Length: 397
Ligand code: LRH
Ligand code: MN
Ligand code: MN
Image 1 (cartoon, rainbow, N blue to C red):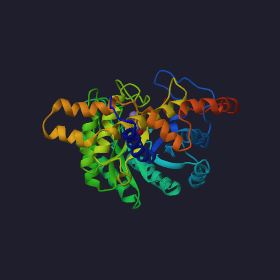
Image 2 (cartoon, rainbow, N blue to C red):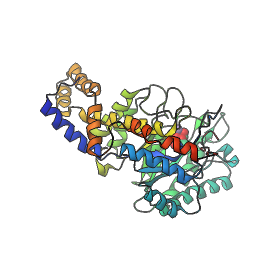
Image 3 (spheres, rainbow, N blue to C red):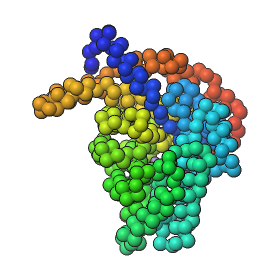
Image 4 (cartoon, helix red, strand yellow):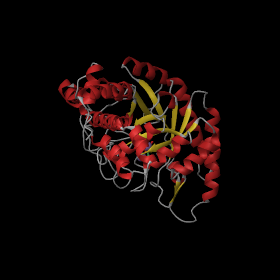
């Protein structure tokens, strides 16, 4: 554990606090609704019935953590008639609308794919939806459009793998042309599921290649749950940052397949390693524009506490990453001192950053323990009493 005398500790924590204060972690609207697996959705009392109520819940996460001032929407799960009205509602709740997530995976038409479907009519329908998402961004003032495609095939010979790449490129280019000068397209990859033989955007390399072809406003989104077990995600982060192509994270935690559990729950060390590469590669600087988002569902735990815990886990990993003594690490690396380099790295990881975060929250006028403060607030009891007939998130619907 890092051994700091009191004065140095104060200095270190002040510097880190200033950097942690600027962190922004976006929460997803779908985390607040009921969700589950293919096998069962466990309904919880008090979940939101409207998009506005999802915004209210996200505002609670921000109120207690101070670093979650935006909410991502998923269209059509969060479809409303008036998106600029919704943005105003968010503003009055102390939030803003963040990333717009498209959905071309929940319609019978998409059985054989959306933008890569062999049928041009279905491709056009999918493209229309993506373009409509950009209209929504214009109305809400959102910067980022997130694209994830469930497209792929289940059987050898089912469709032409190469032609599907052409169709994908064509659709992406059409969406890219529609973006405003300050808008970005985030292309998310996923190893498999729901397609099990080929996936059209299965990995970061495919996403990266399409983004390079498209141009500067196209960036890769790394969903931490979308890799094979054992994949070195921090390498991907380092590579993409170096190439200027890391746009965003969808944070969550997985063990086997994609499962959207709480980030940092099973492997906080992996989250630390990822955040270290973010800091090392300049991705933590404000002008880097990396969007740190949660993409999670809470199937067995309560939703708002699940989000608060996740935000705090990201903050903890970030604090540890910021603690890495980069000069000592570089010196050890230069001299090839493997043990010393690993020591410097582990030293930061093993540091208990909870006092630093408590101090930060006090400075920000917040309670030291956001989860306990939320639980004391009475909000959970209030929504259970007030909201009857809670809404189900699209996922698991
Ligand atoms: C796909 C995914 C993608 C979707 C979200 C609900 O697994 O990660 O980001 O939009 O889940
Ligand atoms: Mn995702
Ligand atoms: Mn996912």
